[in-house]
Image 1: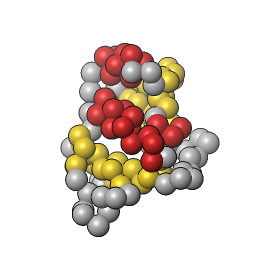
Image 2: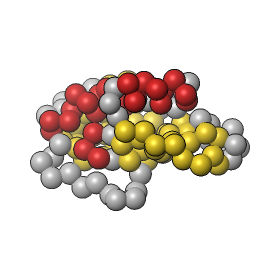
Image 3: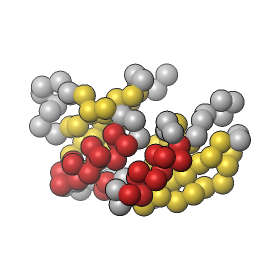
Length: 117
């Protein structure tokens, strides 16, 4: 099981990041007190996304996280309604897929269900 991944974001993107990850079904959780001044943490079903606030975030051009999202079509609509860029992708494994661009430019693959699901 993958426990967490850390993504670097601009400090000014903290609010939009909360909106983005909550739309994907993640709830904000408190990081340990000694990390709270630099990190925001989000969790769903035991998997966490840690956002490290930094003035010069590293954003890979092609690298990305992939998450299975509840209510796939409605989630994409909500992201678009909130102003996030969403692009359809080709189905794989019988699963609808899309790509969303989150705060600070990170690409996130969205899946209707995992392979074999």
